[in-house]
Image 1 (cartoon, rainbow, N blue to C red):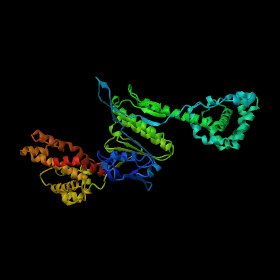
Image 2 (image 1 turned 60 degrees about the vertical axis):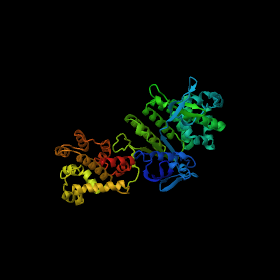
Image 3 (image 1 turned 180 degrees about the vertical axis):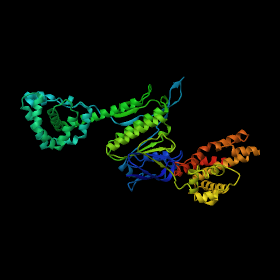
Image 4 (image 1 turned 90 degrees about the vertical axis):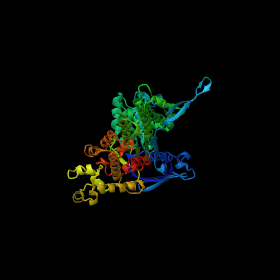
Length: 577
């Protein structure tokens, strides 16, 4: 079941937006968009939707329009779920977790020479991992059971030590419903009969156990809830006899009858203790040599106490905080599917820490899969996995956010993907994808060989086609070819440089002796032409587009860059310098 759409109204950067996402469960959905798109607005919207209603502060309203209503909706399995200021269908269906950088500026106020002087520092607020559990001992009196066995008191196992294994007690808690059923007449009578039989037998502990097992093992296996409890006890009962395990079941039945609250708390503490050890082991693995975070139980809560952010490396701080939040997500007791948004945490990790962070994600997904649950992981980032090779999860998909109406034209598709074909490769590079003052004609090849319009096969007409797409982009039209726009920018930058060369020999060297725009611009500067910095910086954009053979269908990633107003201003300057 997918989450197919997300719609947001009046939250942060979005007045109103509809996003087609098709998020898959138990998979890392990598949501890619450039900086400034509104990725943090998405995470803010979900942060505001954790409770029984959508709670949006005035500072998080779009342009701080507090009078306008905010809304978040998702389309899930064909149904629309909404969160508003009065209700929240999303949190009724999903657990929601959001992980983002959580560093806050603080100021210490020491007095120096009688004056209060603020000293700024960075703080990572403590992370609350849930309620602490008070250690509980079992109310168990072995002498009570020894009396029940009379002369055969040697047969009584010490439940407190036999069940000291916390993993055993954790599994017993998971079958507490079966322990509750042991008091039912059929199982209760059977356990009483086993005790009475053992009480009256003579011999060694092992021989008595063998006799009782021969008489009752088949009957025990036929009572489903008794067999379930017996199997759990046997699983961890290394060195136990069959009778030991049966008597422990008898004791669990008796303790459940006499003080179920104490029994359950004793079992629950084992789960809690194992969880705490898991947390401490995790913290220990990623703590630095001299800077450590700590797990503390304070005022009934389990907290991760972080050191000052300034004493941690950026990668260590982000990985530590990220991992602890994943643990909190993993250990939720809810059975609802979970939406987990990770807001640009990966963008600031180095290669090694990205590998570790992905390992944490894969373990989280495995936990949900093993429990038969679903988690929708949404990794918000500006790093495109097509080019950034740090993402290597087995279960991942890439989703490009934003308007996808901008599509590559058939002309640009073939020019880019087939540009190395020998029948036109040299001509494309010299006269079409770079500037050349001569109007070169290969219209027959364009039309006969590749089925493209003849007019595009004349280089100056091709430039006119590029300019038309550029005008559509600048005018904000809904549909244009972003690859053609990038080609236009490159051609125009080269044209401007060519026009400023003073001699024929310089122009010839520019056209014939230089391969690539960067080399051409370097040559122009070497002969005294001052090339604006914007022309060089824009190479990141146009080279990405014009050498993107494998990602040619992802027009939206190029179009989203071109939509940036700051970048548009640079492009306008670069084509007319």
